[in-house]
Length: 638
Ligand code: ATP
Ligand code: MG
Image (cartoon, rainbow, N blue to C red; front, side, top):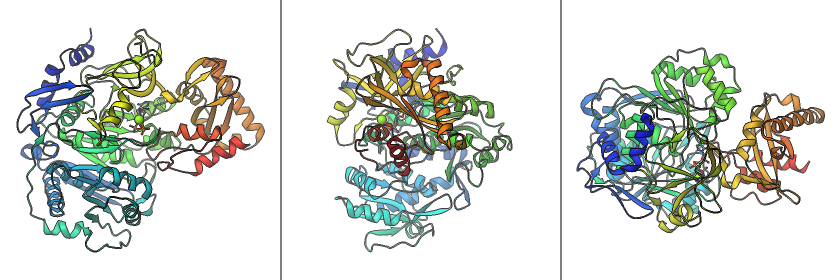
């Protein structure tokens, strides 16, 4: 048995022993009495009896050894700001914010909704919440009033922290009017709104409710606020899933389990050099996600800081002022670990590759990508361009940290293109036949990716204020078994590597053959003139379903006329025939300039499918560019 499989086996055979060792990676006020309480499945309670604090582990405990090292590096290519906060400075800012929140009445257990652009104050606010035992509920700054209002009603925050505006591609995006409209729409009203004034847009202040961070910061310049020691099982935050498949779920996370899971992942997966409170100089972690997503929570804010690393918080596009901007930051801050998404890499892939050669990237050890399937051409391109391992990792808002990846910190193992890797320690991942509930043990059998409980530390505790929804949504969908359904469809090869084939509701059934849309997309995207592709199953009287492909060509000129489009369509079909067989061949390949995606870059396949079948596209509040769906409507109608 190899090192990783031994490690992993122990994590399941001796969960308590394994995780009590990992628990030493963080500071506890009082150590846990019981490592795991699974007396009420599927609810797992980790580190029962222990008390700790997330903010302490991210900030305070580093003051002893690295107070003057960089902790938070805020870079905005929108406003041309660049500020580094040392651990000491971050500690001071977080205490000011914590004092301000307390001033506004926030107490342990209260919710604070954070609706902010990617600015340092957003990090202060998150850390300030966990410092005082309040729960943050960050709502992605790109959402408009309706999405925001529904989250205000679900989280019922005492205070909302926001800002005058964000900026995107040099254009000011006002937040305050959207927030005011959302509060009007919502049934629940916060008692106060704390506003960061970036001086990007004028704000209409609501007297008695709105407060300026500048004023409260001044008032609390020298305030000290001690960390509130909370039970390990005390919730640290709630966060909504992306809403790719329907109504977003309010994921609730604990404190102790999350801190341990992140610390362990920093060591075993991201190979951070530092553990515990002391150690040599820190390194820099650059995660390009947004604090509005789980990746941002775990790997912009808490994970790197818990490990004593500096973390870069970046506001801006990957292509402004030019497509070299991220690499310039890697050079300047000697970034060792970078984390991004396939979507972003595909954006860069369309730019001049010379930008990748312009900077000294020798500090970089690996690039991690997550959030959606990483297609092989994109993976190869970025891997060859950077010359460092590209490590895909599969997870969900629900999990808080990777479910499938490669743990190079335990034992070096190769990545396989197209596979996010193997199950991480603590996750008992299974493939299940969704009709019979039987486990598929052999290689190359397709099934639902499911996880046997208890879930490891860091995993969601429940759906916020809805235990019944947690159980019925995730744990009751496979016949005869209490197992967690990821709603993703996958296959495992003989070496134990998993391949994600799409969401379970994206599996299509063509004349009795079950095909993952992902497999067809993978085949199509290997065509040299395909930049992006979405495949959906569409109802068909004869075959049950047929696959429809929507392609963004690399060179749009090729499909400018009908003959060109027909030629490329033919080539693509031939390619699918050759690679997967005629049954997988899409009925039609249509060309568009942009695909409908959520604000987090995930394809809205369900909406595309609805449009193809002439149905209503459903809830589109999370869509990035509504014109994309119109294009689908237009090409389908043709
Ligand atoms: P909702 O659950 O509200 O419909 P969502 O599932 O898109 O939204 P997230 O939790 O942000 O919300 O996304 C998790 C999903 O993203 C996974 O279930 C999977 O479908 C996809 N995913 C994430 N990482 C990967 C990856 N590395 N490879 C393939 N798919 C991935
Ligand atoms: Mg999901």
